[in-house]
Image (cartoon, helix red, strand yellow):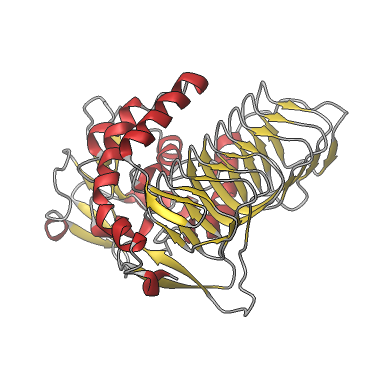
Length: 407
């Protein structure tokens, strides 16, 4: 293959996307139907690799054949048809830039350190506005446009599988992959596309209104109400009411309750009856805890719900505050409204917050693997690194030393 794409995020700005990027490179985030890595792979017909932070690199290194050219893209950049045209014109030794930062660079060798190359390359001014993911809320804010982008590329030149007459269909902006089970479902694509992945199962009485993307092997339970701007990654289970939300995959929000204006990581579980708020009663803009500044950051948004790291879990009837951030592997089961920030590897049960000891977490993961068949063995080193990195912050929150900054 003559071109290899390298998604670069070995930089301080990746901290602005925590806790979602604690367990993965920025290029592995899901925005739309696909992850960023998957988008570049099918758009450019190229192998895609990551150049990311040290503790993640060994687990996200992808083998590829030697290439003639290497296209290094800032990993938080979102593709568009116009950007693809700009990238196609980029020559070896050039770097595409806008007023904010560099966008992409073309090299004839695999780079070790991108930052040192910037002043050596010829800058080419980008003639278009380029979209990027800077903060976690950008994922659901920009998801609708990316869902449409993915839908057009994935379905280009292909035919959808047929639907039975047992469904209610409004519009024809639908694409159903082979093996999907769709019976007794209301599908409204009059205003936006609906994509159903391979072997997904949509049960009777569920309602979908595009823009909606359903990943491979996902289950949509009976009576679910799926509103526009919704991307559910592969292997998930969803029920109740959802809108303006992205779920990375292999997570469960399987029962009644509302989830909106939110981003959920991998391996998460939202217990039955869980609902989140996405609008403050005083109609002020929503703040989110920021891992980089260790304080609340004003999003400027009137609506913002829940940001949830991988393998975090909420007990039944959880009430999630507006603009809440729940860290990786946090376990929460309380009768009151959940605090707006729950640190990574926290155990918050009955109002008492403690550290979720790593050995107990590892035991849980082992039991989960035995029951589900999901293999997380390669991830344990990553989880342990996150556990150690967040020790100080977790201890400060448990001891109420930073409460004024995140409440």
